[in-house]
Image (cartoon, rainbow, N blue to C red):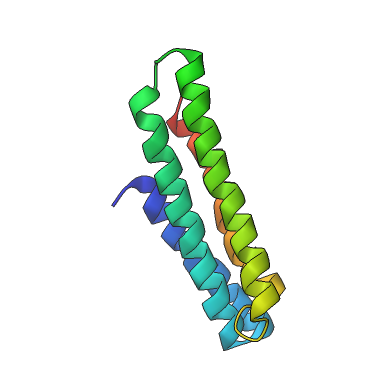
Length: 114
């Protein structure tokens, strides 16, 4: 398991527990699902970057942009899940699970790609 996956899993557990405390068990499930989605997206985005580290800027930025596209798809997934099934994916808990995991992992990514 990569360090990013470990940190993402720990953050997912933290935000799922926080959501459970604030909004109940269904919110914990939603935060957990979207926290794991954020972790998976971040691991995939880093896997896209690894082969082009040290490559010309145009190749690096193309892969970085693809990773940002994956992250944008995660935002769309939040909107779809919360829009279509609000009882299983409460909007606040869903967004907290995704963004609460993804944003710290983005800052962690900066340290990894130096």
